[in-house]
Image 1 (cartoon, rainbow, N blue to C red):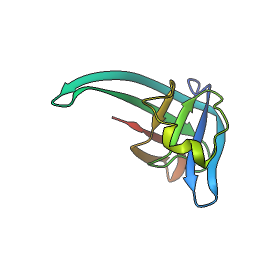
Image 2: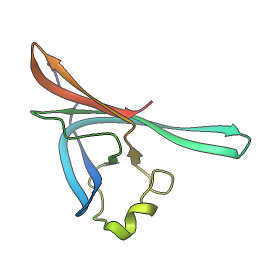
Image 3: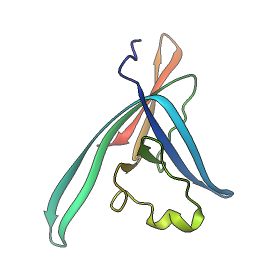
Image 4: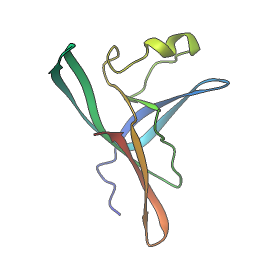
Length: 113
């Protein structure tokens, strides 16, 4: 597989019972777009994105938050305000799917459609 476009670093955040797991993932591909829609409550903003994480194992799962680049250190007290609506470059993973080639894990595709 050719992963030459996977040359970005993202920072992964996951809330755990022990606190916030923060992990920098080099060698990824991240593409996003912000969309605005209107409903009966008014304007709604959503960040849709695609993340490709090559490697030996799946590291990204639904519910994780992904920051474009090297993200800040955050604690449990920051989690509820560390949201895509308030932090530029942050997205929350809605799906994550492992991909295999000839029986070998090759990458994870994750994002929000």
